[in-house]
Image (cartoon, rainbow, N blue to C red):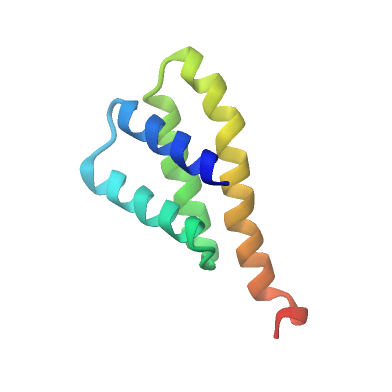
Length: 90
């Protein structure tokens, strides 16, 4: 997961058209993933929306690589939501 986070950060810095407040929000979400802190469903949706915005700001070659990294991060974030909702985690 660490490599995914590092690579996503590289994409974030290289992407065009991302506002500073959006970058900060993405970094907040990446930090939550790094420390395995649960997301709310709304946070998952916002992270996905922001990730799509990052993708739009990348070159075509980068978009291909981005498509390998991002689903893993999104899946991990969503798994934390599902784990919180699971009756087994209570």
